Image 1 (tube, one colour):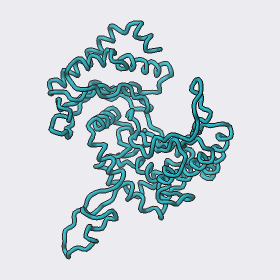
Image 2 (cartoon, one colour):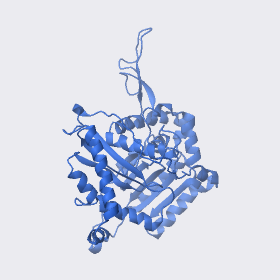
Image 3 (cartoon, one colour):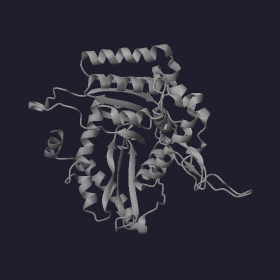
Amino acid sequence: PDGTRRGPSSGTGTSGRGGEGGGGSGGGYDPKPDKVFGVSFRTRPESSTGVPHVLEHSVLCGSRKYPSRDPFAHLLKGSLQTFLNAMTYPDRTVYPVASRNRADFRNLMDVYLDAVFHPRAVEEEGWWVLRQEGWRYDVVGGDDDGDEADGGVSLPGERKDFEYKGVVYSEMKGAYSDPEGLMDRVAQGLLFPDSPYRYDSGGDPAVIPTLTREEFVGFHRRYYHPTNARLFVAGDESDVYDALSRASAYMTPFGYNPQSRKESVIPYQQRTFKKPVYERRPYSAPGGDGGGGGGGHMLQVTWLLNTQPLDGVTELAWIVLDHLLLGRPSSPLRKALEDSGLGEETIGGGLDDELSQSTFAIGMRGVGSRRDVSRLEDLIMDTLAGLDSGGFTDDEIESTMN
């Protein structure tokens, strides 16, 4: 959630804290279960400027009804929330909250609804938000306000050096320094050459500084419309009715706009190549050895699994197969890699089914040499070919299903 399965490209907030009250009883029953509410938007990326990610941060920087510069921070400190977050995925942005206190829960819903539908960030008064959360120029050595460290005094003709700053820009610089995360991004771009999934919704640090105010505001106008929104709510009957009534009060004035939903659709990527596509990228590693004392190479093989929606049976079959291949230390693909001595640790994570098109990825980090990289690829393909012809035992399948 983000987000991480490859999960969100980004996330803001906390996964929650222990709520008030509520001891459990037999069977896991909790007499005071969390009340949960969320609003999500299908946010189709149109570039790697990271505008979905920047908006995720920015809408929580004050709204029409709650004009505080950082209501999110106030909620973290003063709310009874048990979950408070916001996540950007490659194709959607989600704003979930939870609490066990009814009054607090309703306040959280109101703050989030006002934030997503009426953020100050897209109004003239919120001109500063994009510079804070997205990107800006700062004078090297300047203070937090962009002034120079010596109080802003400079000599005539003095040359100033500038650098990029911004919450999302800095966050994504960190994300791009992680070689496994970079490998995931490269693989996704290769698998989806004609799809919006080829873009990084979290933002590529090399592209984020091209994000304009017009693009930022336009993205919110286009996709943060009630027609393009989905709500989810869990609680007792009064919680559900209150949530729907509260949401209706925010959403009804916008009217119905089918174009908003139509524009956010992400078409299915078709298979456009007949043989494997290879990409090699360098990455920084402490001491030049991958940071783990072993080899400095990494390999990941990734497959695109479907070019149309999966039916329920096929989707379940992929989940079962993923567990059979990798789910236990004795699983054949996992065991083959870990016993090979070709690398330090498996990577890839197997099945990723959180997007409309699923993928399967497997590989290893800490591979000793380019020759071992080739041997590792052969091992992966040979192991899968052997399983294709030999299959799994009835006991393995039964164990996985149970």
